[in-house]
Amino acid sequence: MKRHLPFKVLLFFILNISTISCGEEINSKYRTIQLPQLKITSFNLENQKIDITSNLEIKFNSKVSRKSLYKGISCVSGEKKAFTYIYLYNYDDGDLVKIIPYYPFIPYVKYICTITTDVTNIYDDPIDKEYKFSFITSNQYYSDKEFNPKYYNYNATYQFLQRRCSDCHNENHKLNFKLSKKELYKYLTKNKNTESDKYYIKANDSENSYLMNKLMGINFYGDKMPSNDLLPLYELEKIIGWIRTGAKYEEN
Image 1: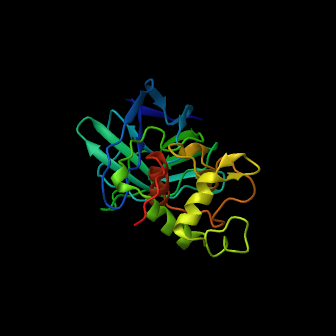
Image 2 (image 1 turned 60 degrees about the horizontal axis):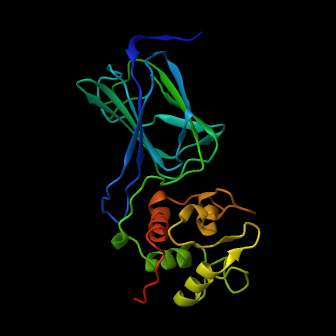
Image 3 (image 1 turned 180 degrees about the vertical axis):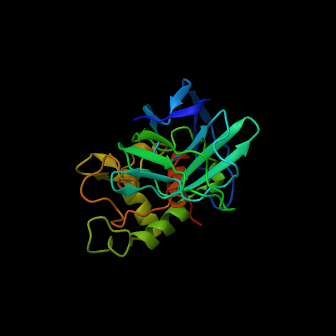
């Protein structure tokens, strides 16, 4: 049986792209979708395709809790839990739940999130009701982001590939990341992945750069890389920002 909320809930979903980059804050665009008033505890955002690196902000027009900054609101897809930072804020006109992914959400899946009565804030005060919401992800990432080129460069990308990938992708692999900085740049920008017919790096187009497809787990062939599936967004953003600002080579 569905439980009805004692108050009308007005839900706002704000598509807010993560801005973590070397401690610098970069301006982001916001696209706001206002959904109808809802009266039931569980509600879905399945008609809204959520970018896999998006922050979610859900605004209630009444109080959900007594305090702010909660620990442990759960978002899961099947048996896989999303690794997120989740906060709940109190405002005069209602409460706000904010969910910030640490790793990308999985593309093309449904996440179900639960704010349960056994969740407590930092003062160990429980929330008053149990609330659930769900959303489904697309294969989009950083779709509305404006990247400032001074924060992104090939040096950071090269260092990332050496640190994260070169142990396996060495001289014994067809894609060798242990090349010199200039040789690797030429290879990535001039060669294509044979299965996808996409350049490994396509300047100004991160979503059609096969290296990013592989790292994000979108439209790729073979195994996802790296195999442990744990690349935090702040590392991926450095490469995406570099590609989207022209994928230029710098000597120093």
